[in-house]
Length: 141
Image (cartoon, rainbow, N blue to C red):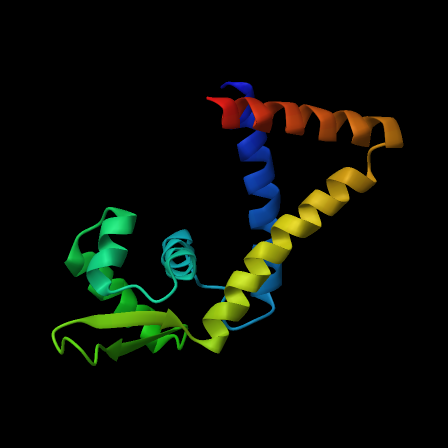
């Protein structure tokens, strides 16, 4: 496993643990990673059509339709028909869906905060320097 994979796995595991703990206190403890993928994709895309969501996630239209129906049943997503093209449907996050996405983002912020708080000032500066250096090299490629 290279450094990037290890860093990603560590971060992802910590964020997932916090999110699972938070969701276990709600009626959404049963949601799977697949549910989150769809919610995140809808959040990323805004109000996508079902076909654009399928394309974005690289899954079949049938799979997308089945998952959207589950998310509608869970009251996490709202589906509505296009006024211009009655054959097209759009989906958007409901208020509950937005809450789940905010919880996921909060998990990332909390893990990052804990990480930084547990480092000394010099270590924080070095971490920031290394991250900036790595990101600058990505931009130049």
